[in-house]
View 1 (cartoon, rainbow, N blue to C red):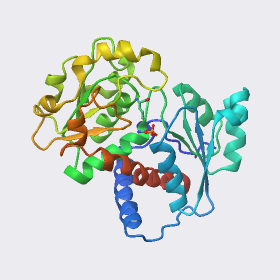
View 2: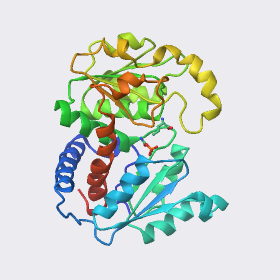
View 3: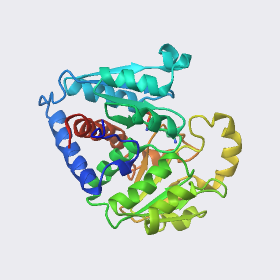
Length: 303
Ligand code: CP
Ligand code: NVA
């Protein structure tokens, strides 16, 4: 059981493994685009537990497994025993004997850790309140395709110090870029996560200073899943943190704009920036498919 590899945060893979994963994702994207068969996970099954909504994560994992000749199974707590109180540890022991990998989207990050500690099969974090590592694989692939190496570049995170922000902090250390974060006071990322980012990460409250000369500007919703009742209060707190044309003008001329989606036009991003020439959000979304296929192959077949 100790040999099983999980993907709960980006730190579960080394920098070299991440580099190989991105290269493999490019190759799998080429195969898929060319319509070449690539049934590398024939007869393999992915179990997917969703305790929160999803469009991209569900469809990318499900399509990815189908394209690989395998199968993905959607499991909602509403109609499994998880929703009726069966312990996560028991569910992990049972499910992981029947499927080849498990993807989980849930609230507490601890839930995926508890599941993984009892799982015989690899466990993938499909988003928790603290981290969203799969999205970072897609984002790194997307930057690489458009601008080459991200190592040494500057990334600006504008908005909430949330799960995506935390995964950007992890990525800064692993992929070797500088990360400037600007959040409203009181919405900074967790100090422990920032500390682990070391020199690569600067946290402040000024979006203009963060974006100045950046090669990539990233934002996310102001109220994440589970924070819906804070929407109005957050709209007030984040009012000066919209990524609009004026803010993007401060970034490098070649800067890209990314957003994990779903986006709220007129809140965290203006419609003009989201639909503008610097925005690569649709390719970023597509790249969830290719990056996660590389991840599934790595975890199920071994790196
Ligand atoms: N970006 C992302 O994870 O999207 P979904 O919530 O649609 O899966
Ligand atoms: N921070 C967002 C990301 C959605 C993909 C959330 O957790 O709702």
